[in-house]
Image: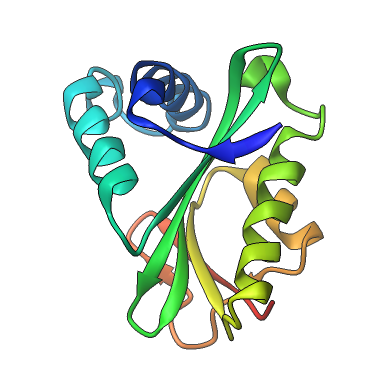
Length: 153
């Protein structure tokens, strides 16, 4: 089930976010750069839930949070800032369901383009997005350690 996140979801969201980050940053960044940021992550997720112009979605199965996604307008385009799935639920359709819910909302709202950043070493995520029509952003292909992708919903 995909639903809108609430403040009651914050603890589970922070745990899932930390778990997901560890899978794609491990071996590429020093652990201190991505681990132990629960306070900052919690604050960021809380602000996203409270923002009037942002949407935060949760994927839930049998009462367990299995995925999260967040998007908001930025610089004239919709920006998918987060899409994470618990590694225990990879390849079970959770990411696809979250992605499809985001794209359906963008189409319903008349969004002309969406953008996202994906860690350059996260080949799993890059393949996921490419399979769903995301392409390199022609205006900005990279920002630091992240590739820029664009989708025309």
